[in-house]
Image (tube, rainbow, N blue to C red; front, side, top):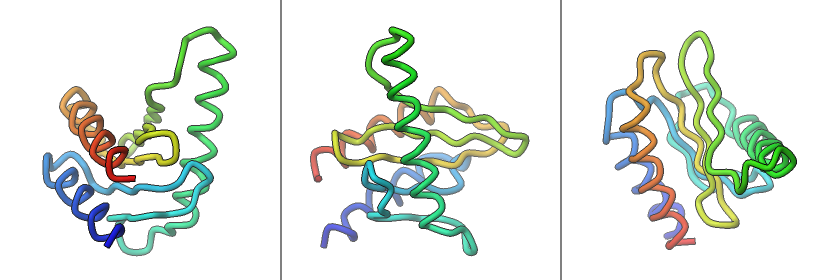
Length: 120
């Protein structure tokens, strides 16, 4: 039941724009709760890396006096990875295309994270 609801939220997120290629919800310790990832992408690896990056972002934001962490954005040659908290216990990770319109994606991810936080 819970996985179905989370998958529904992710499906809506992925369908909000063609710029989002994949998404996942995981616990803050890296355990996958739900995912819509491309075939061949290792869910455990995505979960572990997302949790590590978000944890490092939290610490960096605090140590450098930037306040509470809102999101982590990684830009690579082939696109973006966006990670954000969905309440205190969950993380949303989104993979976006190289030419993605990030402003719209930030808004859609924030809304999805709020829905997930209410559900969890």
